[in-house]
Length: 218
Image (cartoon, rainbow, N blue to C red; front, side, top):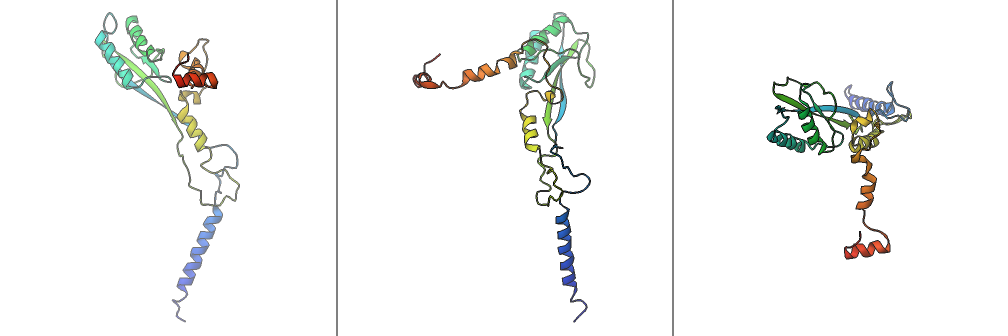
């Protein structure tokens, strides 16, 4: 027998041993997670968007108010967003005009302002929209779906579905970091959600079915 005839058999044995060892490894190691705590947690990121408006003695002119309102609309300003006026020297009339425009979208003008790039030119004020977003990095994670779980560990993908849905559905992502606090006042954007949902449902019961069929009802 030639000395080269044993090489294919030796290579096949080495390959099978390598596959067996890799399968036995599975989800092991020092970073194994044997708890029911998900390591895939939502991460909240904040972005600031700015727009400089020209100001005057009487606050914002009508064209500037329209320009700012169009910007609010294009940014889809709404619940969860925060609006600031960066120019500390802005007149009360300017603050009032910006506040009234923001209130049309259900957002109150917040005190203070985040730090932004550049500076505000004289005769101008900077309006800042601060918006938070949430996502779960590293999801989905199916890196170990074909390996053995001999350490009885939690899979790396555990929690991706629940936490991903939570991050996508929450109205104000900052509530994932710190829960909502009440200042004692009623928030119109959230206080009537249950009642509005009830009113928008189709009528039920015999009387409701008749009213729905005829197009009547209250």
